[in-house]
Amino acid sequence: MLGLGDVGPDRVQCSRAGCTAVATRSINWRNPKIHGLERVKVWSACDEHVDYLSDFLLARDFPVVVTAAGVTVDSVGAAT
Image (cartoon, rainbow, N blue to C red; front, top):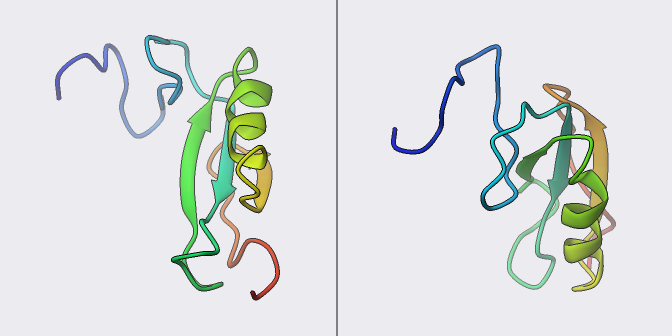
């Protein structure tokens, strides 16, 4: 993969454009206009960018659940 640096199964890179830091959080989200409760999308975030990335999604009224990196959730937000 291009531009991912030293990442692998144990080292996930932050999803913020241009950031090469190791992700410590998972931002679980979905677009309720097009996805049902079963669809969960995940962005990875370092400590510096977790607020930036989650605020970006929340500003668009997307339901968001932030967890530790690697922790999964079954659904995000209520049914629309």
